[in-house]
Length: 460
Ligand code: UGA
Image (cartoon, rainbow, N blue to C red):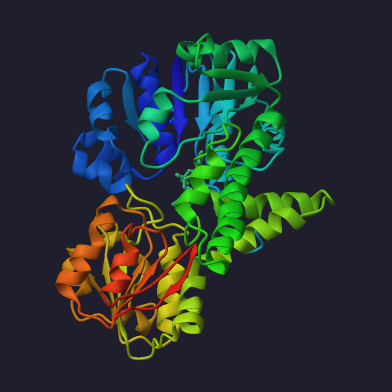
């Protein structure tokens, strides 16, 4: 199959690379010539600068210029194309609705080219990035308006978690394809021939609208589940001293019907998808006159969770932040990524600065260059109070307390490092329950407050 993937961010680049591995002729298109040059160079550092996914740069190097091609010009390659995947960003607008301007702009470029094709073949235009229910129909009307001949529209949402995108693209739980006609479904089956009759992969054929809805229900359900643990599980552990979170979690999720994924309590779920998708669904429900109570509660619980540990530190531990130095461990929205979109750390920094801290000493194994874009002192002079360090130890030096915001594995050994570097009185705020031996830390004179536990005052 000859396939164009329009948009080479996280979704598009991974998708293009994995499709090329199946022997399709894949053209990854982007309007950004610098990005295309970086991908074309094959240099892992340059590729990772744009999309940092384990195994992705290596995969690109295996298929580049054999099955995978990068281009800024669709016109030159449109003839003979069977499918175009639309993988454009759809960020939230301030009112929660999805901003489709990147999508529409790409379509403005592609639709006239589709109209001019001479090959007479059937071509399917497929929405892959998350778009509101009804967008495939909107796509159809635009293509009709341009008098595009012999085309079909489809929805094929992506379900990739960051940090594991290549592996999960190769072995997805399911592939959802929504199309109107058997002809279009046949093209989609050929694109995904390796998955169609796979014993462990559900290949789900449905309508475009259902496929679009599946993505929203899946993401909002996952966020609802995380928020259930944060809003109910963690609260139980905080209100009743002998409720132990780890045991509660194991006891509840031993039931095969209840997911283990999503049951670790945290200072909120971040990332480019959950917050954006739930806000978009709230907006879509409002537009369709449907009740939004459950969705709004989930969204609010998740937002509240991001910084409530700081408020608890004040109320339960009597912590004072004014003129204090705080080590901040973890900036990315989860481990194994440098992505800081909607990361809880953004809210943590905002809250600490608003409380007058003297310095935030930040450490993250990957996200520091990213953080410098977010915390740019030219934008806000308060960001001058943030300094960055290459190791946990350096970040802890001279600090009065630490806030753990990301679940990087290396933080599991933190208690030893804290003991080496800082003497009590010292407060540990643990947003990810990363310190298994916290009761020992308390006997050694450190204060400890975590999501899911009441404040434990130092014992000596
Ligand atoms: C999420 C979904 O998991 C993917 O299926 C989906 O395709 C993707 O969004 C998307 O729509 O593109 P991702 O944003 O990469 O993937 O991140 P997750 O691994 O789902 O984690 C989201 C947040 O939840 C992170 O901040 C993570 O630390 C947090 N989390 C996760 C918890 O707080 N508790 C948990 O038990 C699990």
